[in-house]
Length: 79
Image: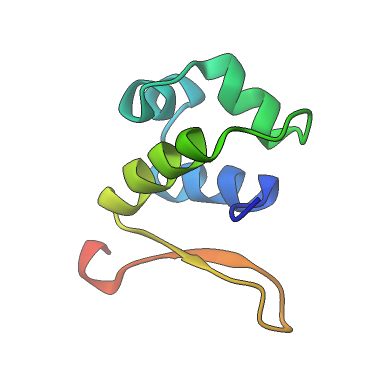
């Protein structure tokens, strides 16, 4: 999975979105978001891409594992 459950939870917090809001913007369900965040499922690649696209459009940048741990941040122009 290219977005970890903690990254997803943190990304939602950065943009102050509920699971319902992210689900609406990513064309999925809030239950799917909850299951991904809890690590209960490995989502389809298309679902992850939709989630990533929605969050990136809101200004989230996903930081890959680079020895210091994966993370998220807001783009400078959205702060």
